[in-house]
Image (cartoon, rainbow, N blue to C red; front, side, top):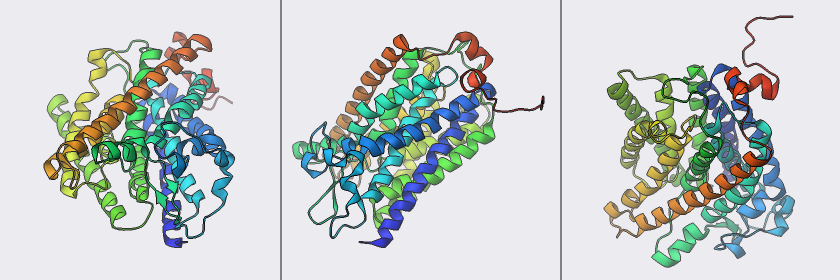
Length: 421
């Protein structure tokens, strides 16, 4: 067993777990003051719920092992409750449980991302029901499509789901998604769009009405996300080597460029660069580089960051033009950014991109992967959300939304400025 790589993977898992509290701060700062607890609790609720489900059966669905590598839906019954993962095969590079922990943090974060689309108006209980069902029938299977690392005979992890090895067997190249552009960001962004449509617009929804109540929270959250993203991207190599180092550098370069591009668009469009824009730009760049971090020269990572920062800064305006209330721009940043990063590889991936010596096959499989996940996630998320809304109810009453839902849903206030006792 390689203790160095084991330590690297466990440390990366800790980094990624920190991203969910970071997301809570990022989202919490973007909502109004009377909804901050509700918003942050949806991230922490996902942390608790998905952490438990992952151990019970999530890992068994997402990683059914080498026997079911190309099956779109499979489950490893021997890993219900992680029973089989407790044993470390002879010659393994690290304990299977290290990989289990690392991937658990991906599942938690992906579910939490969706919550940003329904800020200020969702019931906590309904959100938890949605999170459990969506994780079970959408995230866990999609993670298998993209990742599905199964133990090979030599104890190493063999790579491939139908999106990777399956497409490779047909087109000669598999889709590249090193750290989750499809499984995490397109997946969550599509579900966010579906929920925004199911729950409808906030009361008085229009441009300029809902402004972030705490930009320092947003900056803090973005900083924690960026820090954790090094574990997200470099850790996906599962080894402390040159590929991890490339992913690490690109995780600096792309979001830095995206931050600058977003601020430039803001300056041209609105006259002033904002702190929220800087934070959002960095996150857009992080989203875009996620699938591409190990497959791009750093210069091309900078170009990707510029494209993602500029396009996402414009894409967040679509909700006002098209009339869907994606409260915290999950669609504009994660869905659009994930699509940009995934499709960009079709042009600029080292060796296989269209402009890097490839013949167009890489672009084709990237598009198949991206839109397969988008459609699958959107349709099922819409169906789940619709059923919840029509049965137990997903949205709070209008009067509670206007008053602020923290006290109604959680019995707490985010800011007690006067002690009344």
